[in-house]
Length: 262
Image 1 (cartoon, helix red, strand yellow):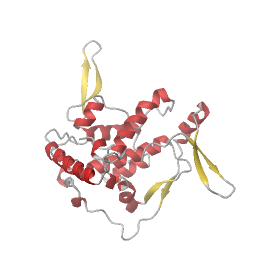
Image 2 (cartoon, one colour):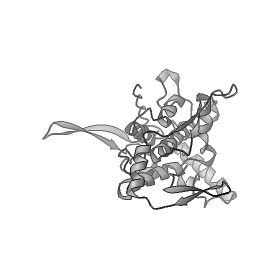
Image 3 (tube, rainbow, N blue to C red):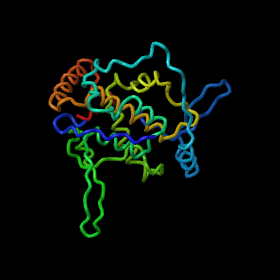
Image 4 (cartoon, rainbow, N blue to C red):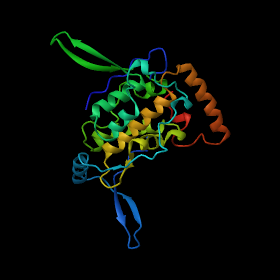
């Protein structure tokens, strides 16, 4: 498939999915009920997961007649201006992410750009070779404090040993928790019109789960954060925080201002 155009730098404005599944086994009782039991990962299980990344099953379907595009003007961020070319995180791009039609590093690049990291090429004067470096030039304040360096949120190595995958899992979980509650199911609702209804449990892998989480965060960013001045985002965050206090939701583990990137 054609490469996705990088998002433009948004220096003057705000720079700018479903926790990862635990290692588990599914058991079926005589009555037919299915339960999930946590088990420690074995090397055999890890190898199987890595192989499964290549073949996972996707639920497809035909969009209904009433499932047209969602009106993007109803959200907090300004809709993409077609005069700027194709939207780098359009519905079609998000679909390619969940269908694994964009490679892992490209997904990372889209997330990093949305978070506000900027890509530069640094020249090694001794070898005269260039190295790609992502700098936290415009990164959202709270995210920059936790991640001054752009973290892998997909797991490009597809090696799931804790010492390798632990930081990836933590970064992806932090990204997922930052999505406001009302946007948690946004991806499935948005891509339904394109025929994607989610993944089946059969064949689901860590890579597929993280792709859906990253795509859902990009959709949330597109609708609520992109192009909004950072001071305005802070004002909205404070208003939301007061509502959360009034509703006694400040201790919720995900989807509140406490977990947000601003």
